[in-house]
Image 1 (tube, one colour):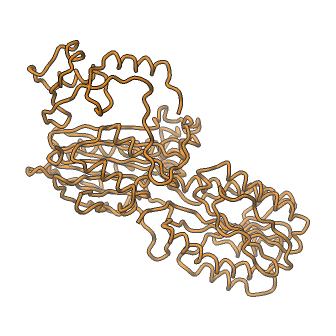
Image 2 (spheres, chains in turn green, cyan):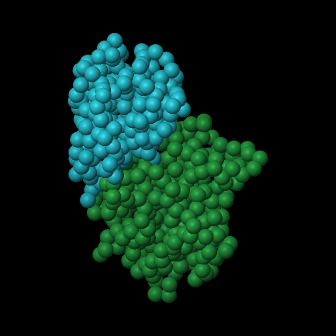
Length: 378
Length: 217
């Protein structure tokens, strides 16, 4: 563990100054200023407190939580000493290493964070997403080649895209980011309303063309070069359009290019694959490391349509999740069940921390997006 | 089922015929340096299972597929007579299904095996091509990369490899070529291991001072 920096310690002191008392066992505090802002955002004048009063109060502060249910935030215990978050270890751990910066040969894109975390809720849909650089990439200075994008449209429809840049392509991370952004942008413009039919062929072809154009820009080419884009920018892509239904369930229409995966997870049925992802070649008994990806496009992308009951969770993940998960009956499946099926939302940070689990021999980038019908969240 | 991860089986098939005698120490030192290099690459090493088969008049598996992080020292190769390609392929034909089955029983996903075949001379007069063909008959057939040094013939080396671009013939003397080969083998194993660790596949790092053998025939 690296030592906390000076700025971190001053931030910690700020928290301590802002703490209010809490019963034992309460969760780690967040800065009081954040909590106050949340109370103000939701517009319950009778629930607002003067900031100073709220900070000093030892009484519970009623607020509207992120999932739209009035509940109570209990006052919290003061934090003193070092904060420490233990890694989630599943079975035998992999090596624990400190990341090195992304190597200069990848620096065509100026910023590539090690971790991306997101999460929010609409009245009908709750979501968490995390994309993390694999231990192997952290060790060797390779960029996170996975990426994802989730967007809520005004109609209530949500669109999500997950991409996994193909391992040996130098600019695969650029391909992945371009693909998810273009896919979500296209759907927002061309199929924005609940029930809108999606022209998947045009959507996928558009994502592929964006990668080719991005490759032209990154490499400074005079003309687009699809072959070079395939060699250096290839990426898998999963795109889903999620519509709320009147009964509290959701429908999800999913298209995939390459070897990422999607599952419906429920208490009763466990992990049900919605798209194929990667599997052993039944004939040869060996697994293929070769991946088909954009900007190569299938002749006609096939969409899988799934109905989600209020207690189902939709999971979309790259093979960094799919490989250790397997059929979901093992210990990684157990952790994801616990994370996603508790009837309440994990915090985005908790979600990302769980996805960053350590397990020997599983060192690839990991991206996981989870979507819940709000009706199933307590 | 609890997945155990993905592994790439790598087989180094080494010529131990009499003509290799002046270079055997160098080859053994090269294998020791490969072991050291892999032990400094924990992520690459974790996805590779390295095996060594030596052949002369007959063939011997000196090292069954092994996680090199756990290996104390490499076995020592030694001279064992003539140059029986047939015995080398027969040994591969015996080992490959056995090893793949063993990995799968441990819930590993097994990538298509890679064979690095090194020879410094012409094969014995026997039907080695049929034995090679049998190695390649199963759907789980390996990729075979062939490296010719010394008196090895480009056309023969091309017939060993499974793709034209997998056949390499040295342009320099045997001692120098052997060093280049070991360096390329090490780089290929490390790059492939890292590639597999991050979702990829076999990566070939061609040796310097070798040419693609197919171009010579």
